[in-house]
Structure formats: C-alpha cells, structure tokens
Image (tube, one colour):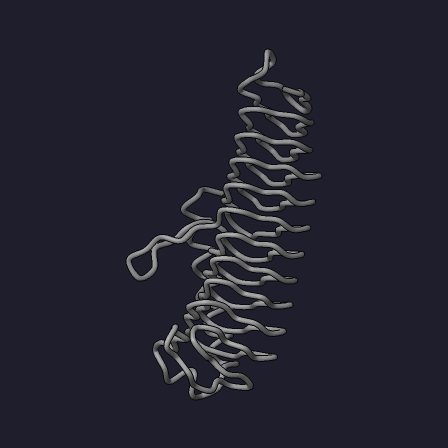
Length: 228
C-alpha cells in the first residue's frame, strides 16, 4: 500500500471516530467550537472542574478540548483532545495531541502525543501534524504495545511490540517490530516484515528483503542477523 493510501485511510478513520465521539458527547460540548481550560480558567465541566489550566474529572466527555496544563481522571473521551499532561487510565478520541500521557491506554484515529508512558497505544496513525500554527509530533513511546492501522512514525520506541503496516522509527528497543515495510535507524530486537531496513542492527531480521546498511552483508533474503 502506498503512503498516500495509508494517509487517506487514516483520515477516513479520523473522520469516522470524530463523528462517533461527538455523537457520544453532551449537547453543550457539541455546541462549542472550542472548550479551553486555560491558566486563568475557573469553571465547571461535566462531572468535573477546570481551575488554572487543570481539569479534574472522573470521566470527561468533550467534543473539542484544549487543556493548558493537565487532565487528571479515569477516562477522557472526545473528538479533538489536547493537553500538556494527561494522567488517565484511558483516553479515547479522533485526534489526541498531548504533550505527555501517563496512564493505561490511548485509542484514537490520529495519535500525536509527544511522549507516551503507559500500557498500549491503538490507533490509525502516529506521526506529526500542524495545529494552531504549531507542529506537534510523536517523539517518545514507553509502553508495552503499539498497534497502528496505518503509519507508525516515532523518534524513540522502548517497549515490547510495535505493529503497523508501515513503521518509521529512529531508535527501537524491544521484543519485535512487525509490519509490511519497516524502516528503523537503530534497532535492538527482532524485525519482521516483507521489507526490513535498518542502518544499525543488534538483533535479527526476518522478511523477504532484509537490509542492514552498516553490515558486511548489506542485503539478505529471508533472515539476517547482526550485532554492531
């Protein structure tokens, strides 16, 4: 599948999830184009309260939400959700653009969390995008598993399993990276796919074509192993 096809599929998934999240949100959230919890805010939210950029709620439902400092609660569900720090068991949304996430699981269409610290990330696309004149991107993953339906693009991955049709990672340390096309600068672990490409390898590649740029055996079919 070509990158453009992946992007189209991810955008369709984002649109579908947005409709689902907004339909599940309360009427007051749908009627607001932007609900902002800023540093000078002091107002109620559904089942919670926003004060000085901090949203505290056991379950927070919203359509379009920007939280300046942090969200603290059990679950957050919305169409577009962005916060500097999120402490939650679960976060679900069409677009999740957090500075840092600490908790259990993230499920979304477009995952743009800069630093993820949790159990699992599940979504349609992980990468970068531009919102409100600033660019946000996924930089760091620290967790157990990442399952993505399209492109998984992250700078630094430390975890157990990364699964996506197309992976683009600068540094991977884990048990296995699984995809159709895997492209990683430095990999420690197992890489499984049709085409595997790394610059520096400390582990094993299994696939139709295996490329290790810093290896005497640069291209190998079926299996390749190297420890730099």
